[in-house]
Image (cartoon, rainbow, N blue to C red; front, side):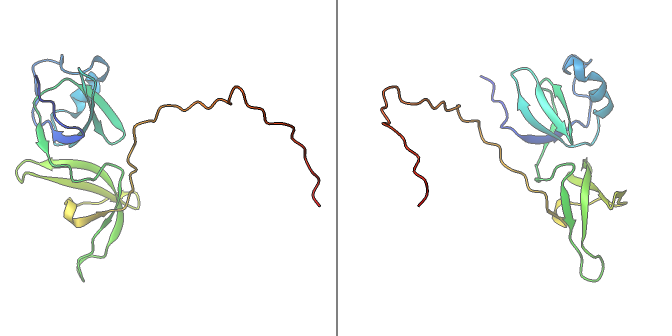
Length: 165
């Protein structure tokens, strides 16, 4: 029995993981060839028995199980609004949006590229320098649809509408 990883999780493809493109869903080959290898941190959000669904921002691709480097999920996503913490007299706090989530292999850590007032910020940020402002709701499993039917043998008697007094 294969011990499949618990999802969601996060990781990077620093190298091309397999010979050829057989490991990529045919509809996603062009995107995957553009994205991998890279230092992008993907979020693996689903598995259909053949393909994992990898998410990067609003885009998603499907790949078969392959070798990747698992990294800690720090709870931030592309598009999240964050507060960049101020540092006493050195830096004022600002509100920014996450543009990219990347992995620095030399340091073994994730960094974030941000934009403020629709302009990219020049430096990299670490998770501990930010507070998440975006709220995400937890999705619940759908409940079975309830069908209400009136009772079959109900005698409600006569109903009369009385005028107000």
